Image (cartoon, rainbow, N blue to C red):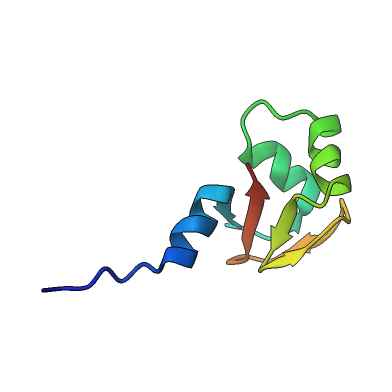
Length: 77
């Protein structure tokens, strides 16, 4: 019998965050506005202020944080 390879922790985390992979170098705020359909600049900054943005598992609050291709951006649901 094959075991499930996804741990309980991974399933729990997957339900809490929307994950986005950076496809090209950019700054965080423009990335958020293009990745999330219909998000306003004010709402994106609110996510940053409320510490709802993680980049490579670290909380980021800086709107002009430089992103590199391949990084994972997680946003709390």
